[in-house]
Length: 278
Image (cartoon, rainbow, N blue to C red):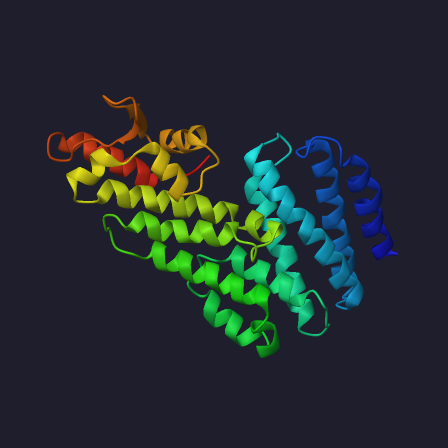
C-alpha cells in the first residue's frame, strides 16, 4: 500500500505536471510533504526491506533534481536548509537499508551519498567501512571518488597563483564529462559554489600584482564553468568584486591593490572570506 502511494505521487502527480514550470512551488511542497509522510510510515512499521529501498530510491532522485532546480530558481515554498535535511535523512535511511537489502541501484545511490558529502574529510574512512569491495569498484563510485579527490585537493591547497585556476577547472571538466550523470552533477551544485568561492579567495590572496590585473572575466568564466559572463559577473558581485572594461574594451576582474590601498584590500578579502552564497 505504501509503495502504491509512492508510485501515485510520481506517476500521477509529477508526470502529469512535467510540462509545468520545473520550479512549481505548489507541486514541490505537496510532493515533499507526502514523501516525508511515507518515510514516517516505514519508520513507524520498523520496515527495512525492498519496498522501503524502492520508495527511497525514487524519492531521492526527485529530491536531488528539485534541490538543484529550486536553488537556481527559488520559490517561496522552497527552503534550502529544510530540503537538505530531508535529502540527508532520506539518504541515510537508504544507506542503512542497503546493509540488509540488496539493490541493483546501490552503486548509483552510494555515489550520490559520496558526492553529497564530497567536501567532508571523513567521507573516505566512512565509505571504506560501509561499502563492499564490489560496489567500490563500479564506474559510478570511481567517478565519484575522482570528483571528491580533485575537489578536496584543490580546496585544501595553500594560496597559490596561477596555474591554480586550471587545477580548479579540472573539477568542472569532470562534471561535464560523459562519466558524470545529470543527477550526479545536480547533487554537486552546492559544493560547486564553495569551490568557486575558494578559487576567488585564492585569486585575491595571490601575491602577484600582474595576476591581479590580468584576469579576464571571460577566462574565469571558462575555467570555473559558469554558464555565461553574466553568471560569472553576478557571482563576483555577490562577494563584493567587480568586472570592468579596460582600455581595450575587455572585461577584467577588478582587484583592489593591497599595496596602494591596504584597507580596501583587507575589506574586500574579508567580505569574500565571510560571505555566504545566495
